[in-house]
Image 1 (cartoon, one colour):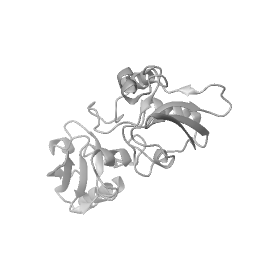
Image 2 (tube, one colour):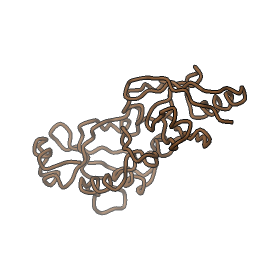
Image 3 (cartoon, one colour):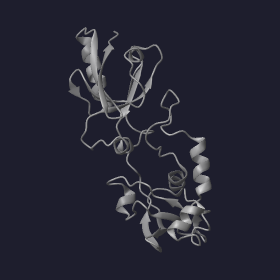
Image 4 (cartoon, helix red, strand yellow):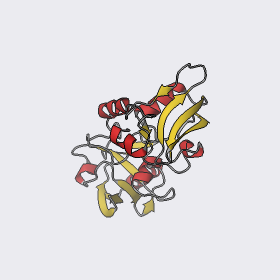
Amino acid sequence: PLTRELAESLGCRKEARDGAVGLMISQMYAGSPAEAAGLRAGDVLLRVDLPGRPRAIELSPHEFLQQSARGPGGRGMGDGARAPWPSRNNYLTNLLAIVGAGTPLRVSVWRDGKLEVIETRVEDAPPDQDSAAQFKDAKLGITVREATYEVRAALNMTPTDPGVVVTKVESGSPAALAKVTPYEIVQSAGGEPLDAPAKLEELIQKARDDKADTLRLVLVNRGRSRFADLTITP
């Protein structure tokens, strides 16, 4: 969200109405619809013009902050802790969802000391943590999801790095006893890299079929890796 001080430092106090209008792009996701539209990190999004609407929609820092305060990042992640990546559930993306995919629009942008207009259209983003594929094993007390684009960007993972995200651990479960925690990345199980939640499901079932006592996980948390032996229950 833009502030009066930031608007002044960027030279756009008039265009941003002293910080009452404007959202600054802090990060761009590689390959995203926003990048394809020509937006850049550092751009200030001011207004959106839609076909058939007489007045432009001013992008409100106040509304952005209000919605951010109401909804935690990483919705539905179990222990109430905030996820280390931003949620897509925010004022701007909710506004664009109402506008609808495929709708053409003109975005007024403050860039490099001048006002520019970018013509583009609303496009669906790829799956994020709220909509990604997941696997839950109730007996082991663990839920994991696909490592989506915002997770990989926040944790400096490449598109090909293996891993699934732990999104929930049930208290007192085998996963909790193995000290698995939400937001860790499970890189491998039983020595096999995980490229999807379904792969973990497959390896847990194999361990059960083989009557194995434990399944060794390789976990990564803030750049540090460790082992965790998950006790397999029938």
